[in-house]
Amino acid sequence: MPDFDNETQGITGLRLMAKIREFERRMPLLSEEGLIRGSTHPSVGMEAVAVGVSLALETGDAVASNHRGHAHTLAKGADFGRTMAEILGRSDGYCGGKGGSMHIGVKEIGVLGTNGIVGAGIGIATGSALAAKVSGDGSVAVAYFGDGASNQGVLAEAFNLAAIWNLPVIFVLENNHYAQSASIEEMVAQPDFTQRGIAYGVKSVAVNGMDMRDVYLAAREAVDKARAGDGPTLIVADTYRYLGHMAGDTEIYRDADEVKQWHDKDPIAFLASVLIDAGVLDNERWTSMQAELTTEVQAAEDFARNSPFPDVSTAFTDVYDKEEEVSR
Ligand SMILES: Cc1ncc(C[n+]2csc(CCOP(=O)(O)OP(=O)(O)O)c2C)c(N)n1
Picture 1: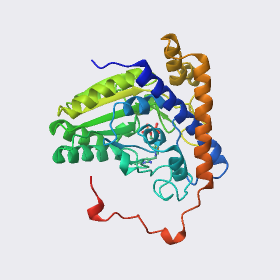
Picture 2: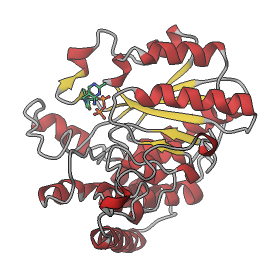
Picture 3: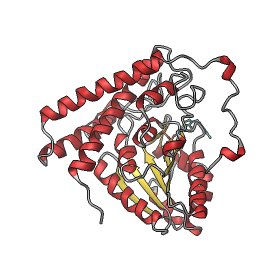
Picture 4: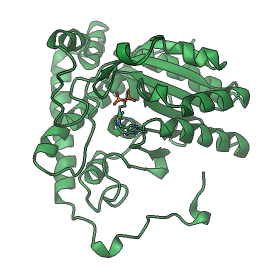
């Protein structure tokens, strides 16, 4: 069984979760200010999943994300300023400002892209895992997707191929209980999502997605298993988004009591209290850590705000990749 180390994974993970929250918290505000064109989907409340999984990954591992993908990208190692610049459509963004919130690709750290097509990342990660297996490069691939995406047909095809071909892929289902405004009670007759993996011969585990330690330990095991050539795992993380589906969501589909109950399980406050109880963190260090990362996120925002829009002459540059440049 893998171990969770309070100092290495605990403090590092807590800081990263809090920094991602500070980043994501700003999304509705930037949207209201008119700085984000199109919709953006913050993952405030869900930080333990992206961070717990990413702590088990190497830089060369691949990640296929979804529309709610800022945390997946940042936790994998993306620069906060360049990610913010991409979301704001600026030329210093990872895709020169042409991708925006739902199309952030960072090839050098294996981020295959956030993605506006619900469920698409499931097939992309499975294909990437097939490429890794054929090339023998030892990397693994992760697909992040929601409970809503689990109803897409690609899930069946990907699970089956990953299982019969023993592919090094980890399917991470972030069950935040809603697909836009539709609750899982309305959308699925079998709410135990591990049953979907089991049906296809994919090892499937359920984790507490509000406890980063639980996510990390399951991810560590799944990554080690995939890297050893022992095939795919489905991790079903029970989690919740604290903000609306996207900026401007009136949230009439859920009641305040439910939201409050999940706030009581806040993954950041929870991990901080665990680390304080374990004696590796104290309130003073935690407060200064939070102040420090707020300054860092402000610097990222300033960088993005000051970055110029892409020049119109570059409209068709980097839109298509040359065949010889496609490495995966
Ligand atoms: C193929 C496709 N169908 C529908 C949509 C519209 N849409 C965007 S997000 C979303 C809900 C997705 O829910 P889930 O997969 O649970 O992810 P969450 O938003 O909860 O993180 C829908 C239906 C889309 N973008 N793509």
